[in-house]
Amino acid sequence: MKILIIEDEAKTADYLANGLVEAGYSVDCASNGVDGLHMARESAYDLILLDVMLPEMDGWTVMQRLRSHSRTPVLFLSARGTLEDRLRGLGLGADEYLVKPFSFAELLARIRIILRREQPQANAQLLCLDDLQVDVDKHRCERGGVRIALTNQEFRLLVCFLQHTEQVLSRTFLASRVWDMNFDSDTNVVDVAVRRLRQKIDDPFPVRLIHTVHGVGYRCEREA
Ligand code: CA
Image 1 (cartoon, rainbow, N blue to C red):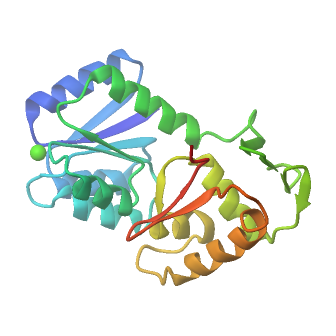
Image 2: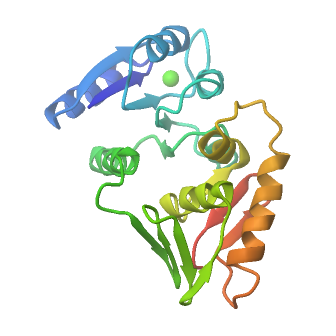
């Protein structure tokens, strides 16, 4: 597993690199946004740790340019910790946003979760949430024991939701995962598809599982 660290503070970069190497990952480092983006384009990484305040090109721009052609998981690591910052990072398609100072143990745990999520779902063909069950192999969806017929696109959208439960998913993220569309593409198509999916898996049932996060996107979870 190969991780790219894009971080301009040498001390933080060293600390991260040493810890990750010790944990068994191989690591490359870039100290500014331009080099980082270049390296991300030239080599295949399993994960990118991305700082926000970087010389030459900030982390937001790196993220935006990266997502126009790549789905490599990105974890923002930033001293900027307002809700607005975190939503911005996730809205740009980052998988996780951790605020500095952070505990290394937590960083490692989050990295493992992201990498596990990215692996082919060899042993997890059955995705469940509340009374909803999706068998990925058999392309079958049931809720409360009732079989629900979905189009291929609706099915891919639902699987994407179930693979990222309790996370806010931006329209851009959904578009890139489900439709293979670029960042700048029209994301209205996502809203239309989500509405159709809801009509099938949510509307007939008392508990809603797909929630709108205004101004950001959607979240799939069983709300308490
Ligand atoms: Ca910085």
